[in-house]
Image 1 (tube, rainbow, N blue to C red):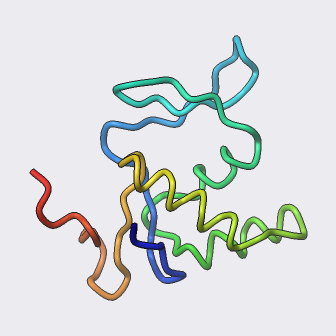
Image 2: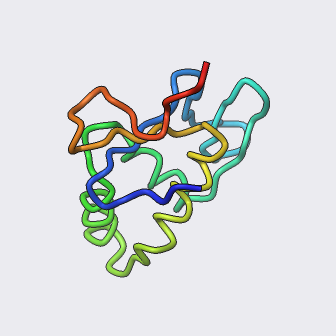
Length: 106
């Protein structure tokens, strides 16, 4: 499994939606296969995964909100969701709109 780098720009995959579920009082991640209830931290990370911010910038925003953020945990969370294909990773070096690790899918 490839690990996200600080310059990568994560974003939700096209088939995935982040929504607030008033019945649960929490954010959920809607995928074609499931509804995943998120904790507050997971929702905060995913709200910032817009394809414009780098992983490093996401960490900076989270540190501004919460004071202490473990960058390795954020990276591991992004990696897990990328492995499930719920997140896509835009490569800063390749330019916006291009995705790293997507070749050969089809």
